[in-house]
Length: 170
Image (cartoon, rainbow, N blue to C red; front, side, top):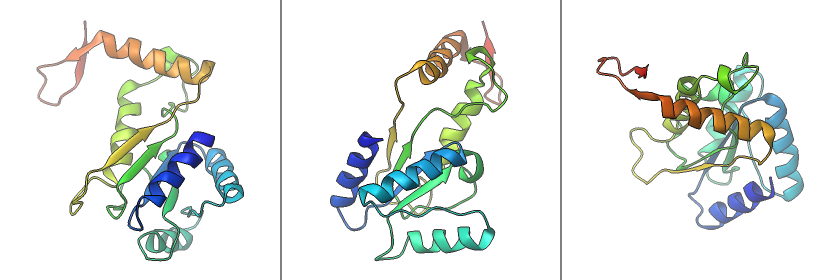
């Protein structure tokens, strides 16, 4: 989390027009990040639990003088929101299939889909600036198992001639 705080400060100090989306999967992570950022003096917004709170946060995010960090849940907010006023996306950990009990049960397609959706909030028309994506993962058995499982699964997948773009197993 110290790395994230330092990164956010550096990005925000680089220009008044810099805005950052930070994606974590679970509400508990968002709450922990909010508490940590508040203690570090980094202003942030969260979409909230109601539609009206979400609307207020999203409208404020693009306005001058408002917090320039938006904490979002990859489960709840990864798709359907246009936030091209930002150009930085931070993904804090790999998306974990909620029903997975081990790395073999993880869906690499689902993980990649959530990451693409998160990045897509920023990287869309009328975005004119280069979008920067940062993936931060904590060392430890859970993240390493997820990433190792992801790498192992990626090694056994190959592109398919299928026009839908699905991968086939060797």
